Image 1 (cartoon, one colour):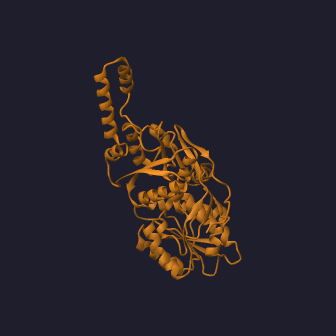
Image 2 (cartoon, helix red, strand yellow):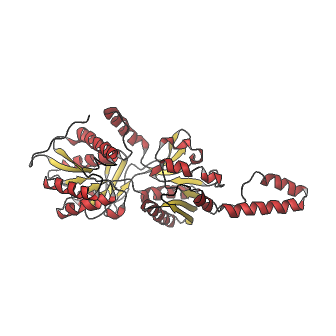
Image 3 (cartoon, one colour):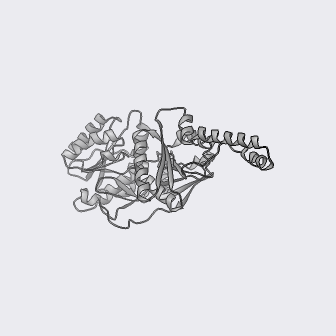
Length: 388
């Protein structure tokens, strides 16, 4: 069991609120984040820092009440909550009191005006992997994406990234987020019927000729499912877990050959077991360097006896950030200090907050292998220049 946090006396150490879903459907995630925060408090926090954990109940109203409670108790910085609607709700009393928030949502629309997002942002993951793919000669991109806020953010990021890199998006195939049978969307992405009909027509033409050259060509085509190249060099698949494993084998089934078309992902691919799905072997995605986060997960598992959520590092880094800034004479959590151009070093590598409240991270490009993940383009270790 982690150590119990005691309620601080006013006028004592620096008080940091931590808003998490400690009950309700996401309580396992909340517990994981709380344990990571306590681990950071013990390793880095020192005596000057006290956490005020508050249960958001996993709801926006719960988050607002939790923020209000912590602020009344003198919280000088709010860490969390996790979900975008809860972040927006908790931000109302925080902004009213001029207290900054470092939250864990990936929804950039709730950032800014004192709210900073420490999460792994899909936009930067797409920019990083597309930039690398273009550097490797890939120019035409397609995407198979869910009709969800995450999917739409990925499509927007892809459009921006290809424009920046002088490439093209040639096809975007959407599917309902709750759709169970994804054969039709993949068939359309593959332009399968047209390419299949083209093959059958070519076979009929060769059979009608019945000469030696036609027989040789016919034998070659008998090994093919379709005829005609696809209009893209890479396809972006912003899914993870079971859903990704459901989609991946459908692509080669409809003759989108991973030997010809590079499969790309987002941070949702950050799973060492992904290579158990053969279609994903050789795929690329951008994520924090696994070497650094691996050390965190080893320490956490040793301490608590279970492997935490992948985003537990966010709570650890948020508390570590608060500890570093609280060592200033006046424990300054101002926007100026939080947006330091040189950034900070965390469990997932370097990060810094931009003026719009969104985090910028140093990301590596990873390749899926049959037995794990391999870094093929390392994460930067410093930020090169200040940004606005």
